[in-house]
Length: 361
Picture 1 (tube, rainbow, N blue to C red):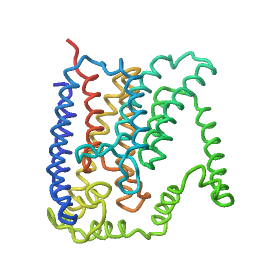
Picture 2: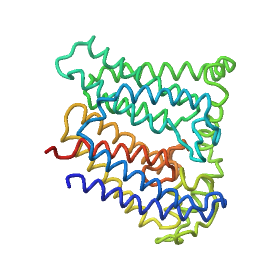
Picture 3: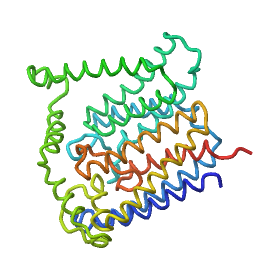
Picture 4: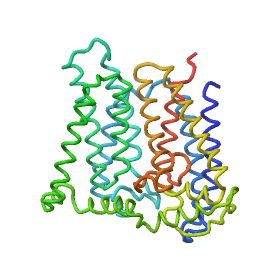
């Protein structure tokens, strides 16, 4: 099977995920006692979806890019109106006691839509006007879900959409002058935002809402090392023996152990040696995907690059915030952290890659 290496990586992540999530249940409340069982169920559903995607015609999903994108936008609007608020963010639908997060699935729809949009334009022999048009289309397609997701507020996935956009435009091959223009505009926007925050807080609140102060506080608490969550997570992982304390023996409590801080659970319970091996496996997984990306052309290449961008960004951000190197943003570790919507999203993206990477008869 041409895609057997991808499946092997996923199986390894599955084993690590279940062990680490099971370990986290020992410091969580009784409400979370069976989340490792739920994660197994989500994995089973995900493998079924991958099999279905593999059996479908190669690249079939590109035909439905507009429909999928519009469907994703509708979900983002509906969740703002009727969604359930969890941890201060109104970003989930609660259906039959199952939480569904539309902003996660929007990553799939956005990657497919941008891949198709970019493929309709030849990156070579293009004029300034044609390049401006394609960049403008991609920015608009990205800004719509970005704004809706930012309003939830969900900073992590909002950033993900921008990462997808920048990466796919880079792989598409836009001229360097656009990066220079973007940096100038971004610096100008940041300067205006800072001015409003310092001198015009009423205007600042009317634009960004009061939730923005919560996000700023999270950044400041990280910068000033005032987060109890981070302090306890660092104490747990930093005091771990070479082979860890053992499964289910996390020495100290910290919130979101099963999601945002799953790396601290792995470090504390399995030790630094196993943790380093896991990082190496993730690196090999990323390299394998990059090699696949280089073998493909046009929209398949853009699609795989979009998937790679959010995988690598999520890995770096999640591991970094567990080590106190980056602010806590709520970005989970792909395939490892607990979460149905997150796991399904990444598994479907791998399913899409498996679909376009299979041999045609």
